[in-house]
Length: 409
Ligand code: NAD
Image 1: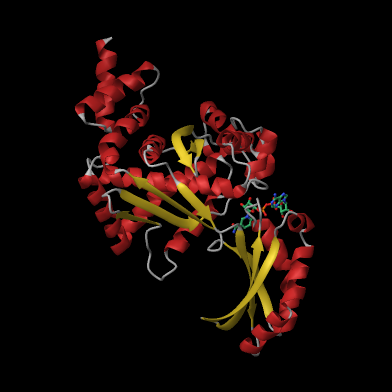
Image 2 (image 1 turned 120 degrees about the vertical axis):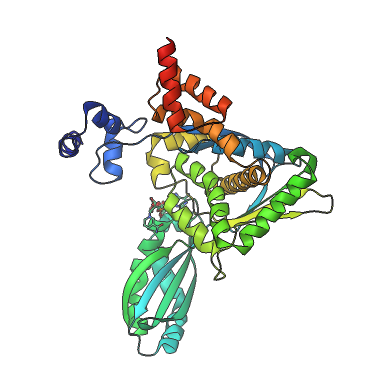
């Protein structure tokens, strides 16, 4: 690692300070970092905050969230506080089922091939399960085999799909191993040629469903309820708005995911592909007014997370974050993340439907702007406070204020 950073430092013309900033791996021991990915030169640390007030399925949680964006942790905590008035979040899940796909091309008779594969279902699933006796002993393993014939740009394709209960694992390695192991059997039965053997991140058999009722007076009254319902209708009708609506949900989901060492690319891929499953891009949440005039929100999305494997077991900070959260099963982690996603969406919509997000956001962002403008030490807060007071949270103003403060001394 040292040699690599020295070389990169030279090639990129980094200063000592810049190369030290990268070489410092924070709470991640360098030898662990060096084994996690390739060509490691250091690390990048992000702040981890804890969101408070979360009650999920009657249990209280302190929720670690790691991200670079100000206001997200505050908004989640505030939303969770408002949800508590009516008991917090109720979340259910479909169980940890992931899908592994085996692609077969050049199949002489696709419909016959489909029948032949299905006729050997038990043998194929046994072969899959032979790959992972540990998972099977824990109640997981291949549970179903489905076959579909796709019409593609390159002609018909047969795709066999293994449905695997991955227990407390995210499951990509487990499922990919199974898909590769059964591929020769599928190839022989279809008479075609297998190419891809890989998990699908459209984890629509691994869903979480969260709901919460927000008492109208606790959130600002009838107008706020109506504003949020209108905001949802906007997202439902328009993909431009919907992308940002769902991004707000992922602010929460991904932040908990990063803190707990999850594969957040898999979470993002699952979320957005699920949002598009009808052929139109839709919100992952729904918002409506109930008979009492209160606001009811619900979220449904895939949540492929694990507590064995991946960084959740290797990164010391992720392990500690999971301990803070206090979850022992992957489905419990998934359920809390769903509650955070719903809370985050509520927080964003409430702000947007009332004063707009910028006031709160820029107040919290002001310290970042001050630092970017060159402030350090005591000047960070001084510059930030003055910008907030003037309602001018901008880099040019930060620089001016910084100069003024220094001249005053
Ligand atoms: P893994 O292989 O490290 O761990 C899973 C294994 O742990 C299981 O196969 C099982 O043998 C064992 N295990 C022990 N206790 C278990 C329990 N209680 N429940 C379930 N399994 C238990 O990891 P994984 O979860 O199979 O794979 C996750 C990794 O794969 C992530 O790092 C991800 O980034 C990566 N990955 C993702 C993709 C993708 O999403 N498309 C593709 C390839 C790799």
